[in-house]
Amino acid sequence: MNWYFRKLSGKADYPDSAAVAAERYVEEQGIASMDGKPIEVNQDGTVTLYHRTTPEAAQQMRETGKFISKENTNETFFSNRIEGQAEGYGDAVVEVRVPAQQIRLEDAFRNGEIHVAVSNDNISRANMTAFGAA
Image (cartoon, rainbow, N blue to C red; front, side):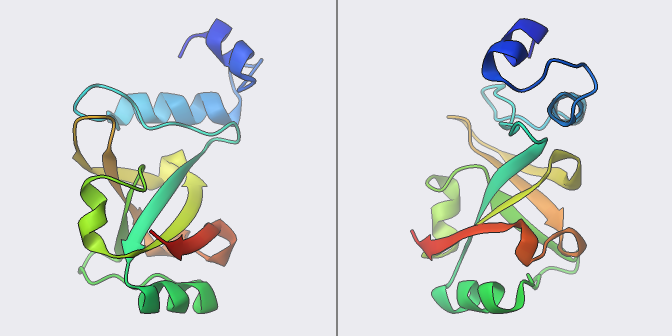
């Protein structure tokens, strides 16, 4: 993203802002869809992600603030889209915002959809922004 667009979008006037550093990380790590569209970075340098799960697991996440991985990686998987390939993973959606530097590309699809992994050590109730049925 060039400086002029950043200024228009309100993301940054300074080249060392959190959003600029996050965008640089996303670009360096190649966190983009198969169409080449990078994951969207919020003004504060975070990315908004959506975790699909069962309603019961979403309730447990809301109550405890913890994500428990079914993988041996201690990571939870997220999509940058509420709808799309991730829909097959559950009827409930938990929305989180995490610093872009804490995500790892897991899979990429056409139409802008990206799946990422986030260490469970970096997710807490403070990151959770919304819960609901899809």
